[in-house]
Image (cartoon, one colour):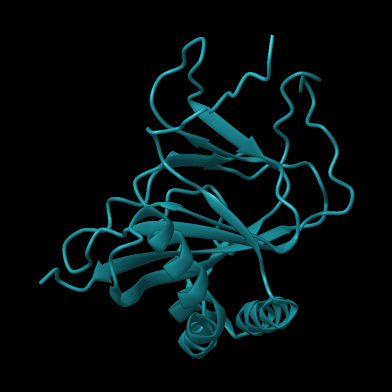
Length: 218
């Protein structure tokens, strides 16, 4: 028998892209978050964002990213990787603009989590996001398995995306243990959740939602 050519296609389902964060971005975002956390309580209140989010990260778990820092890296990094993600799906369309409509830090302590949710409920004065993202600024060095975790189903500190139904040749979940500098882009309506960790160190990430507009087709 000669060589058998096999091609496997994935014509359905959401796409997730992963890329590395620039080291200078990591430095800027960490410094920005530390500045916010050191503010007097009445000033810090202007940055609190947890009341709009699904998570269980406590009062000091979620803060807005300073606009100047976010806009700097939108120009210098995020626009380019978002454009690559969009053009991989629509290679014949030209992007008109990318608008970030919310951006925040996640400061996750031991035993905290984010339940299963999407980012597609940003309605009213904001347009539903085309994409959502998560980037990892700091991962605990001593992350250990949570009590009861099985060897064949490790989940401590992981992020997990869910879509559709499970079948013999059809997966409904995708789980990753994040590393520092990982940056993920995914559809804004894709369900995802964050599992707790058991480290005394915080796990620090950031997220934002963005709307992508293409130029009209002539």
